[in-house]
Length: 232
Image 1: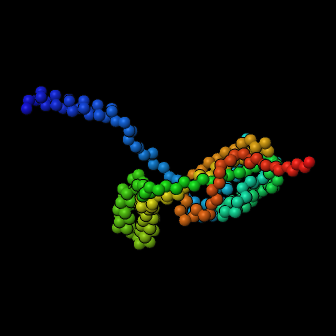
Image 2: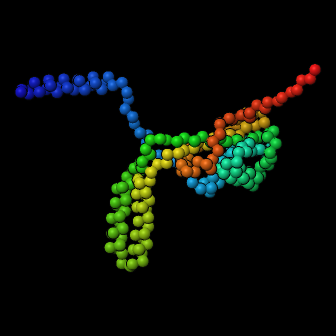
Image 3: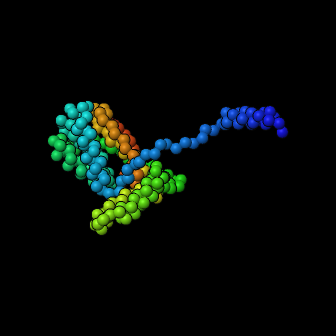
């Protein structure tokens, strides 16, 4: 086979590759860049949510006037999350100088929760560079131990390095939870105009779903239906 003939074959195959690639009907899937997401698995985490929410609301210029008057907290379901969140929110608001009542005729704080359950396998996602980091740390433990002139500093340095290595490996082996919740926070004025909005997504343990009451996202007050009796 001549050299020129080989070039023609390569050129034809290259052209066919371009044609088939260009005619592909479905785009290839591509993962997002690596990111992390917090997991709610203790009542202390709910308290942290309250602290962050109150802190952000107090910094908001739009809410400065609204929080200067009486505020009511709308959600009233009996779920563990709502009872704890409502209690903590009332405490932090009052301690921040905000007056809280239950009249619902002024500024209102409301929230909703949506459950998202994934049916596909949620295996561990490798943390970028974590394995190489772990191996390097394990080697570092050996070097620190070997080169230490005193036993105690060597033990302390080794323990710290092993702890970091263990955390790095744990990121690679922990299975991603299959349940997530979306929490939407809303602050409305007495005309039910939305003044503030915050949405957050968290992982939860599948067995902890009963802690939450999943409610519709309604950033407005439900219409009140009145019944009238007409007599002749």
